Length: 195
Ligand code: IMP
Ligand code: MG
Figure 1 (cartoon, protein in one colour):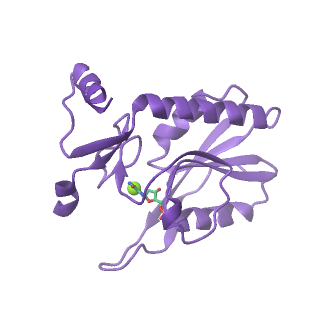
Figure 2 (spheres, rainbow, N blue to C red):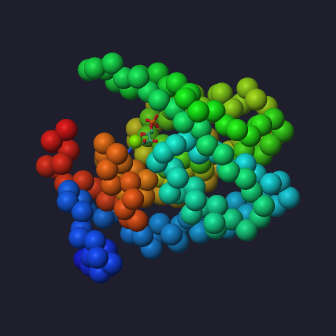
C-alpha cells in the first residue's frame, strides 16, 4: 500500500519528497472520510445554510474538500491568528490578526480544524465566537490528538484519531513545508533533529 502511494506520487512526475517517512493516511483514505463527513453535515444542516469557519492556513485543504462534499447551501469564511512565542517558552498567547468578514449572530457555525492538539487555540477562538451569539456552534476536525488535550473541546465531527506524534501533509506543515502532500505522513527522525 505504502509503496503504491509513493509510486503514484512519482508517476505524476514528482519525486517522493525528501524527509517523508511512513504514510499514516493515504490520499484515498482521507478523501473517503472527508466525503463521509460531508454527507453527515449535509444531512444534519438541511435548511440551515451553515457558515464554515476555518483558521488559516493549514485548514484550507481540508475545508475546501469538505465543502465540495457538502450538498446543501453553505458559506465559507476564515480567521487568521498569530502566536508570539518568546524564545525558550511554550506556545505564547493567541492574537487574532484577521477576523471573519461574515456576521455570526444567529448563524449556524461549523468551526473546521485540521488537527486539534492541546486544544488551547481552538478553546480561545470558540470563546471569541460564542460572545457573538451564533444560533449553533459545532466543531469539525479532520484529525484529533486526544492524548495531548489540555482543555475540554466538544467535537461534533471527527475524521481520524492521531497518535501523539508529529505528522505532515494535507495542510499540516513543518516550518511551512509539506502542506501540499495529498497524504499524511510521519517525518523521518533526521528531519526533526535538524530543527
Ligand atoms: P493546539 O491544539 O492549540 O495545540 O494547536 C493546534 C495546532 O498545532 C494545529 O492547528 C497545527 O497548526 C499544529 N499542530 C499540531 N499537531 C501537529 C502535527 O502533528 N503536525 C503539524 N502541525 C501540528
Ligand atoms: Mg502549523
